[in-house]
Length: 166
Image (tube, rainbow, N blue to C red; front, side, top):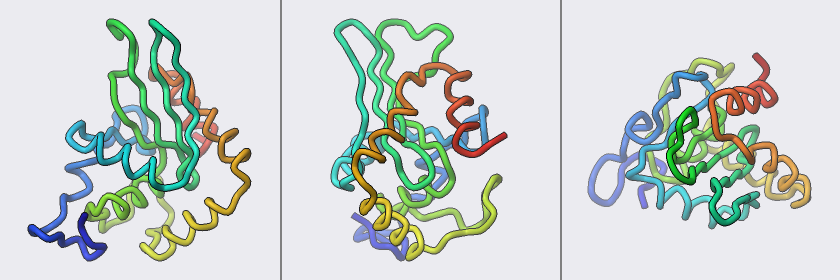
């Protein structure tokens, strides 16, 4: 794991845009590079944040985790995903993406991103996560359920609008 300075045991950390690619759908949506999927899952599993998961035999698989003011979503389509999102992780929200950069040891964006009012410090992000972990688990689970069923661009944009407005 890399340190918060952006330098790991084997050299500089990955840059944020090597791990998170902005979606063309919204500046608040980031598609996660498949090379880091397992590491992201491990970070989410160890974070203590509850996830909502939905799947049944011969159907799509959904996972949604509330991270700060946004969501981290996994969509695994069953069969050919015509008209649907591709398989993979998506992060909804700039602050969640920045926090995940910190937790993954990835260099955070140095500039304010489109849709951000201010650049939070690493300390502010960690404090926001600590406060979130103190929330009642049932509240977090309920908020996470908002991300279940996101399988196409329209449903993803509805979630973005619900969380961040237009």
